[in-house]
Length: 80
Image (tube, rainbow, N blue to C red; front, side):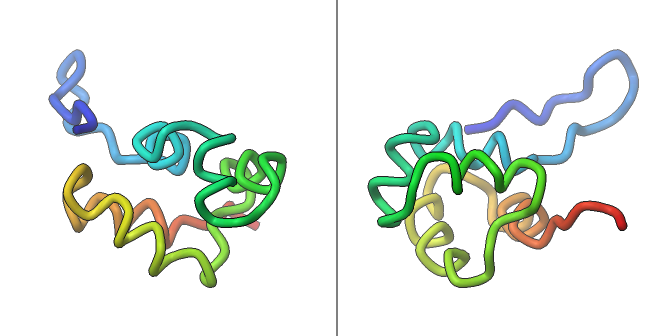
C-alpha cells in the first residue's frame, strides 16, 4: 500500500501516476503486462495514463491501492 499518512502537517499526499507505476512493479514490468513500451509507461508521469489502459490498471491494482486514490491518479492530466 502507498503511505498516505500526513507529512509535516501538510495533510495527506495524493497518489501520483509514479506511485501507480511503482505499485504495479515498475515501468518495465507494467509495460510488459500491458503490451506497450517502457518509454510509453514512463511518459505517463508527465502526460497522464491513456484511457485505454484504465480498466487493466484498475484490475491489476484493485487490492493494493484504495479505489478513490486509484481513480484520482488515473484521471490526472497535466495542466495546460
